[in-house]
Length: 309
Image (cartoon, rainbow, N blue to C red):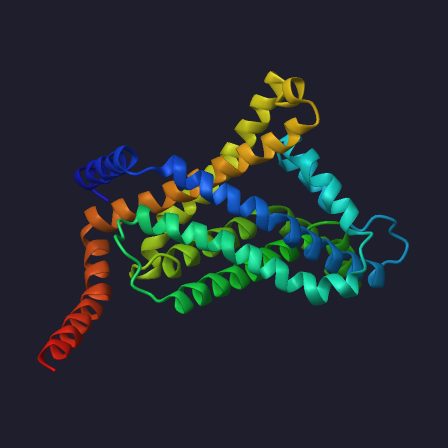
């Protein structure tokens, strides 16, 4: 990208920040994610608990690795907010959760994905989503399932880099090789999986077509931005005392909602970055035109034939 193209991309991003209500859209995304999170956590935790109890019956709390990860990586108030529902989910019958809770979790997560798609349509300057109601919901469900699978793949990569992965590697005679490889490759591979997951959401979510590679700039921005924002929010809460000092126990809820709002805002900013690149970088602009013009021409042709009839 030349200096002139970089300046044009920057101007497009500034224009979008001025003209689009990204803050309001991020609030909608946070609201929908918040309501999708409870059934999703219950389902995932119950499923993980069932698998863990079958593999290792000596473990008293199957969610302990998840809880430890949340405490180490999320802002303290947000982690405290999530700890109780995750722990309580272990006391629920796994068979019931996996039969009925799965549908509830999928539908709730679909609503969150629909809010993200709506926000990304605005970020990409899509005036109207021409896809029908059924297709929009199918796209949201498909992206939700795909995201869950890719996040699960990232979780497997993470687990293989822990003591469990070392035990498996020792069992197949790759102990020393795996120890050095997992130390260097685990987090880069997880980042790659997350970037691909976000790029797929940008590619198939909003009603705009382009080569997949032109959705990676915003996807990389989103993953890196969420990581930086999470650390920054955690540092801010550690120095300010978070919301707990002012609001007591309710402070953890407010802190978690605030973090979700930041995540939603960064997701939308990733869409703005891609929109700017696709408008101002000639190869990307050509890709968008080639992918979208035939569809528009077909729609115009059908409209003309309908008028003649």
